Length: 144
Image (cartoon, one colour):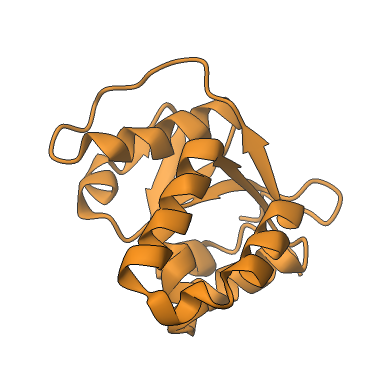
């Protein structure tokens, strides 16, 4: 079933781990980043998630840090930044993961794409499907 169209692309939150995988390693996460760049899907983020991405790249992937300004510029052009008003506190193992849920709810997203096990265990949160990169690409909710 196709939910997104060229005029009305499906909205997703793409977790930091997927962005870093896409930039640094390729594969399915990079395909999703390409969909975002090609306007096949609409990406949503928050200032907190943007800061997390910057922090993780600086600390864990210093080789990507040199190119981060270019990466960050492209992300800012393509990602809609939301400011969640409601605090969500359903994930206990890593409370920071709740920020992903907050962005998705605030952005009225259909999907969260992540590699995070605790988020994936939820499966669905407030009608938002939580899926891996591979699952998202296999669903076919976008039109290129």
